[in-house]
Image (cartoon, rainbow, N blue to C red):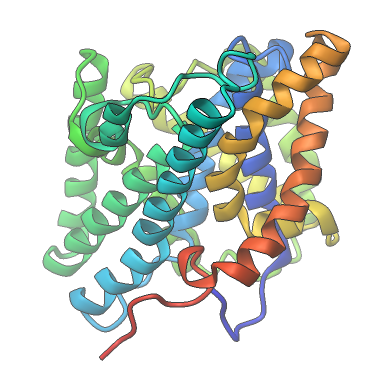
Length: 335
């Protein structure tokens, strides 16, 4: 949502980097765009998104105001982008028969409208699972902050995340992404801790981040476990949090020193729109590029480049036409 406060450009850069890693991951199931670095990036890519969201956590003026804001900023865009994906899928499949031409994936079925309730995966916009999970993380953390004293807050966070880990480790899942929210809670809390500790401000030791991040990534290249909380792929409890915490902290330290990088920073500022729209455009773009130049390591990067250009066109259109549905303005006003 728009704000009068000056934006911190390196946080927008981190959000842009995060959403582009997610887009790149969705280009191909076998993740060849990352090569051998895939496990390293998987270990912190999605946790980073929760961390960045946690940086902006506030309790506002009580639960009613908090819930209204989170409904405007998370659930309204979720509903908007999900319905958009479903409507476009229906048009592409039922009117233009693009599924038969191989330009889109799944054929249209009415039952898929209930995917957010019934299924782990969404047929027409799979990335939107994150918004449901993020909304639940916010609610869980608000309740913990509101009703528990400091030592008990940490105990509740550990207990909640451990419960989510057990559920994921046993291959089970809870409805509406609740188990992913439980697992993701510590990543979100880490962001809030960074904010409370005033780490966002510049410090004379910030340039050391240039030296720390390459070392951390080099180590993680060899030891990072596969982490995918959406797919319920989790390592042991310690590694589930130690590795992402170290990677995210190092990346944060590194990015504080960077100058403004316009395209990635712009995409990061509107990462919610990219999250909601990239799944819609990715299938057709990928199909066309692969048909033209074949499927290869280079074509994966070509798809990513085309998606970036497309998003640079889509973002201002969404902001202009649908500000209340893309968290740029409030749909439900305070009384």
